[in-house]
Amino acid sequence: MKKEILYLTEYLAKSENEQERTFYALLIQTLADLEVYSPTKFTQAQIGSLMSRQGLNIPSSCKEGIQALDSLFESIIPKPLQEAKKTLFMTLLNVNFPKKKGFLSVSLDLFLSQLEPVEKSIYENFLAYVSGLNRALALFFILGKEDTQNFTPERLVAFGESLHGKLLEFLFNEEETALLSQGLKELLGVYLSLYGKYLYM
Image (cartoon, rainbow, N blue to C red; front, side, top):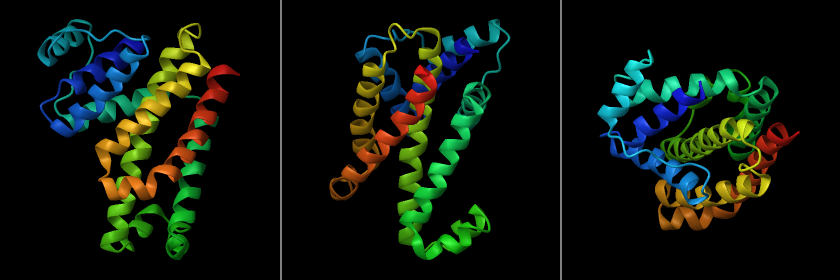
């Protein structure tokens, strides 16, 4: 399963879709910078061939690849950690959209349908940051479970902080970064504590 996750991550990092390629390439480069992972030199087509030879499904699109990756993460990440992440996300929405929290108590779909265009844009950017961070930390968690000697708590923090800076640059403009940087840095700390608790307990 770990091999399939790495194949999918590198497959997405070599994608023709620039937005997906950029994020997954950042993710792999951040792991490489910490000297805990060595990326392959394979092209996307070569990775697809390797997956095929090993009986793994080759995604037909970026969206399918991301869904497959998320499913694998979900099957490995401990249930209490998944529940804690969901609770944290709902709390963040309640705090950041106080006038809409009544809709959120009914359903996420109803909440989303009530957002003004500006609020929706904020939500989408916030979701992109949280999703990117969670996918990255899930990958670190899975690799770290098998190699706690190299995937130390210090490296988890360094990985999170490095990725935080890259995600801000990737997702937000200069003005948004100035407004959101501190709050998102605090949020990063909460996520690092969550993953660290289940990785090193």
